[in-house]
Length: 208
Image 1 (cartoon, one colour):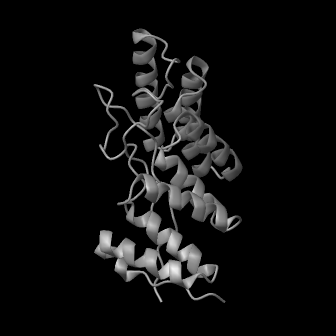
Image 2 (cartoon, rainbow, N blue to C red; image 1 turned 90 degrees about the horizontal axis):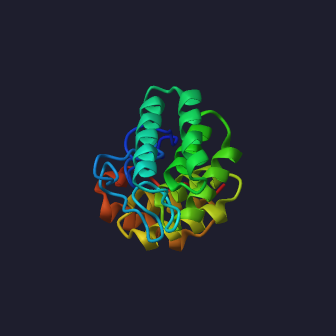
């Protein structure tokens, strides 16, 4: 019986959490402010530099935040976790509610064996942008073993926001199967495969 490979954190741009079975990576802003990858839209209540409405520190502050986010993403791509952590903390010193910096610090914590710290940062990112699905997805992965029902709830939120989030459907199906909820598990597994046929190679687990 085949199962999805263990989730791992990869570094690229801020992408929606529906590709492969990997954890989304650090955010990176391109010139013009759009999120690289194009799949994740900044939700209502957040600006393109990750600030919440009313918190934008002006044009010069915005440019500095963008530069710091890109620099931190580059450090993370080289696995310079301490450097990335310091850079993203600089962003928070300018704007404590910055969505991307909090998310990226969560990714750093997740990569360096600090799941509790990662969850804390993901929650802070979601406090600034309640529909930022990469933070939901990473948090859900971290909760799968200890709090499966809470993880299922997060995956449900993700597919409500993005009905094409194939791997969110799949991971939810695996958790539901593990909890003995085979009806919903089969329905979500079928939905995942309908969205991405490559996911059909993974078989639902059998509850022990």
